[in-house]
Image 1 (spheres, helix red, strand yellow):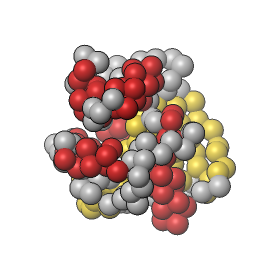
Image 2: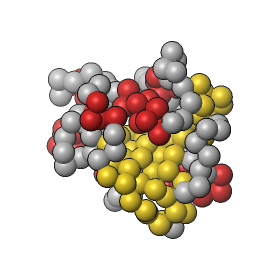
Image 3: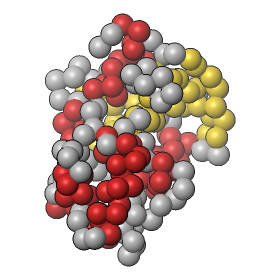
Image 4: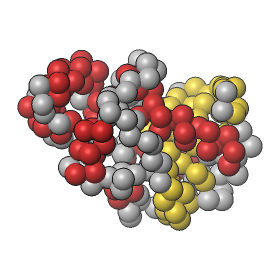
Length: 196
């Protein structure tokens, strides 16, 4: 990783409905879409830190899409941080890393009966193109060495193995299924092995 990626591009204060944060932008390789780290103010970074590694999902995070549980997980994590403090790492890898245009194409294929993984593969991608190395690097830059990770995704959990950051505990972040996302959640469990 290039040295400039280890240094925040900018830092600011961010008051939200779920508490006050320090927000940092880190180089993602695309100037207009930096990775973001929201760090609860007055967080003790040398202790065990609650962390949510969240991949961008504009449809769920911003527009409240019912096709997934991404936005619900994002807001649940921030509510958790409001109570207990923590760091939200917002990685700019929309649509399991295929981008918003291809994600919308995948939506059309899903409407024809393919699941999330099958749709991504049909578009010429791996089922999941995401990379969690930037999350590890950002945490190291912030001085974090022990985490309590909020995830249901075994790949995120495994990304910390031999990383130099110890996972002390995993906290489940399960949302209630509804008819619009039942198939999606089943795919996450059946294909990707999520702990649901």
